[in-house]
Image (cartoon, rainbow, N blue to C red; front, side, top):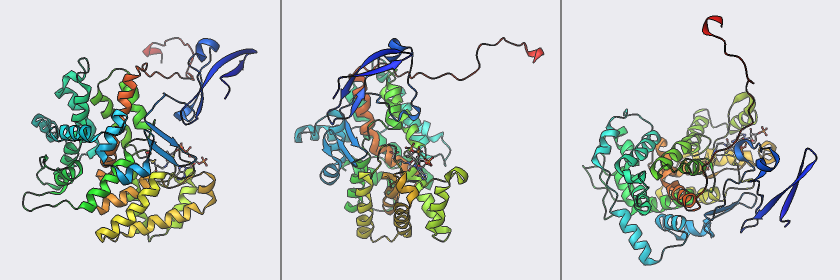
Amino acid sequence: MANSAELTVDGKSFSFPTLEGSEHEKAFDISSLRDQTGYVTLDRGYKNTGATQSGITFLDGEEGILRYRGYSIEDLASKATFLEVSYLLIYGELPTAEQYETFVNSIRRHTLVNEDMRKIFDGFPVNAHPMCVLASLVSAMSAFYPDSHEGNGNTDQHIIRLLAKLPTIATWSYKRSLGHPTNYPKNNLDYIPNFLNMMFALPVEEYKVDPVVAEALNVLLILHADHEQNCSTSTVRLVGSSQANIYSSISAGIQALWGPLHGGANQEVIEMLEDIKADGGDVGKYIDMAKNAKTTGFRLFGFGHRVYKNFDPRAKIIKKAADDVLNKLGVNDPVLEIAKGLEEAALNDPYFVQRKLYPNVDFYSGIIYRALGIPTNMFTVMFAIGRLPGWIAQWKEMREQKEPIGRPRQIYTGATLREFVPLENR
Ligand code: CMC
């Protein structure tokens, strides 16, 4: 490829280096653009902006490829555990047996949450959305581990704490919404069974983790574990670039994930499918509403993706998993049929075909969560538990690369200088 690009502005020519990633994506390095030309770029939503150079996740939206540290998502989802994938993302290589044991055991030993955090939790209204509670309590963790912002302390220790405590905190909201006592973690259980036990065990009866449920959750968490520079991950990196501590940065990522156009879409999907069912299952009506989004304001949640323009490889795995899990658990969920009908109708409709709108990871994930007994308002929390190792890996990489503080420019369109008018004259 050419190793420089020429730009002509106001009759003058400027040269900018180009660069190429290990998977051949090409970029203009415009770091010196403003200094050289006096111009900045305008790229709403950063559709054409590479914010960083990263060695963590590769995705090719045209080919539907997703890889963590070079390993295909298909391989990882079928062969690895979520904590193996977490280690891979955070430390760059699959762990050896010894490294894995140390990692898993450290996480096991840090699952308890400081009892004083309970007092903060108790101050939330009973019906508080669990994403709000999660983000707030993760933010509060920096108060309990002040070395995280006093020189940043031992990062590996904070990483273990986050991975260990997020599932514990996540289950609190659900338990309280039912009026049930919260469960303490049980360190003889593996990561996912421990989470399921905290979610579903009751003091009055024995709870046995169903391996089908644990396996399905393992796959879902792996599929969500990282997705390069998406909205929440960019948020984590941007917040962390000011040297904010890891807890504050991850808390900001959780808030960004909550939005319905990002991770919050999984809750929206199920609510939309339920609405369609209650409305007689007329899929065509909703397809028409989505096609007229400009007047109806309605979008098909779980459809479309900023980067995938052919198919979302995660959605393929999830669609198959949804069939398998529902079969194995003997669950007959009528919204699965509605979802399939909606997908088929959309994939055959020129509006969706022309705009390259395909089901994304969130389209079928809610159906599986529901079959596993996870309530709708916890879906995005599940996404956050899955995405946590990706956020951590990206935060760590950003720090290790000593990235400068994130500070975009703007094209100012407001009023030009005007004279102040005293209150009595306005
Ligand atoms: N239903 C109907 N029309 C859509 C949809 C949709 N879900 N998504 C995009 N469009 C249309 C949009 O109206 C626009 O049409 P036109 O060119 O006529 O104005 C065109 O497709 C391009 O849309 P866009 O908003 O410019 O596309 P984007 O790449 O900026 O947005 C998106 C990507 C994911 C925000 C969007 O597709 C969307 O809102 N989808 C629904 C929410 C959703 O499922 N989000 C989960 C994303 S995957 C999980 C994650 O990683 O967060």
